[in-house]
Length: 235
Image (cartoon, rainbow, N blue to C red):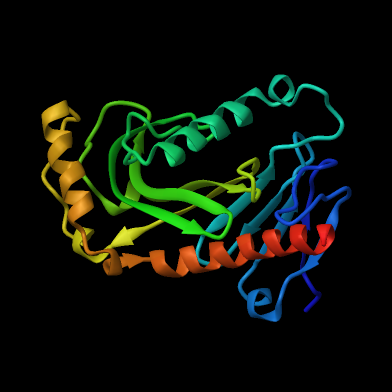
């Protein structure tokens, strides 16, 4: 099998956790990851970024918050900049993520209507949070169900002095063994959704498929590669 590589991009003075990164760094994916990664993509528009897709549906996207080709990053990439600012504010505040204060992923064209299973994540320069939600684009049955359940992680990789370096996004469709039995019809009113939110948060985390713990472990492996690339290039 041909060796897969991950490319980490940053502008002058941007990425490195231990120093400056002045050019693109090519990182070889360890063999422990080689058999699990099904594809690698490099975006043709916007800031260059690394994306990984896994056989169970998990995707991981890491996008730098620097672009040497533009003077005004916020003006060039407003949706990404606003998203990173919202995630940063939530991470630094220590507040619990809710459906109201958690940003939608850039480009999302549907709204969340059930929200729960919130967890915080912190590892070296990475800080973030994950949650599960169901989404809708119109009326219908808003009860908690496997068909519409999605796990999402949002976070940032910071430099040692607190500068925002990368946006980290990940997600995958999930199902829970206890939701194989259909729940009663819910019209989506505020009161009924409270009960569905509570039901989602009460589900045993180990009952989800694919494994949430496994997804987080793979995500942290990719983040570690990014951090190592920055440190080795700047060191």
